Image 1: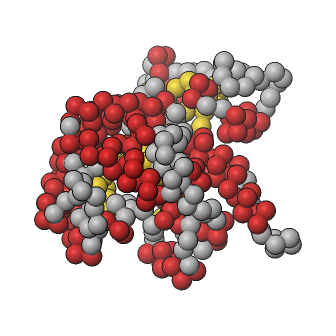
Image 2: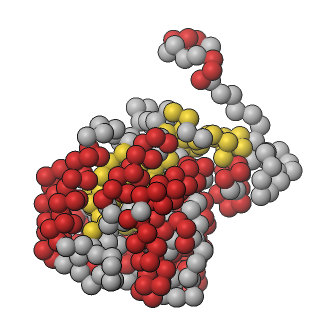
Length: 358
């Protein structure tokens, strides 16, 4: 082909789509706790604070053991890639050394990611907390170590756990680090469920994004997040799995959960209110370009606009999987079927920045 010759593309790097296959942007998971992966599917008879005390904090203490951490982190990064997550925003733990190993594993396996060493110095459980000075100095050194990689795919992100676990002094120090090193900040603001109109205006004015984690919100009985309300306020929204608050590591599950949540909110609205639940087109957007915009990486990924990196999935709906395609189906219907019925078995190849990683 003339274009192939023009750009010097070797035959080995050319893939021809077969019937039942399509190419799509990679998924963006805007909120996932890598160390909690072993607990996925556990503890949903409890609400958030009891769940943290019973399941999460005891598990996260184990990441002082680097060998344990490496085993889990290797598994979670491989699993997210296999599930089509080309960009992930990870919480690690308070442990400096094992958090760096997560960054090393992400780099080696080729995922695009923001990775945060967790900060928590206030109201912490016994045996799992930090002194404010240690939290600050370790976070600064962590940022420097990752930035020294000079790998634009792997970025540090400042990670105060949530309002209950960081005092104002530490928050101010972390803010100074964010400004000094020009890095993102992530935290948990009740997942945007219970925000007042005035609070939404503040978030919108500050350019804050919200990670919509519908599986977690339901599993831990936190509530139903009205994404339509967030979008109407001008807030950027992406999807998150929030493993292990959510039990599925797949953004496909987040898409389906988001659609179901939006429909449930629609049911609650007064008849004739004009409320419109999310469509699968909108959920697909939140899982790709919407997530990229929420993370401010939409100049690099999220769709196939010329000049961006090739973060992509090749999806095959004809191969053995959760559902059979028994009739000739156009591309739009194949995509819809994948979003509602597909799983990792349908994801044949995964690319990040043009490199095949699965």
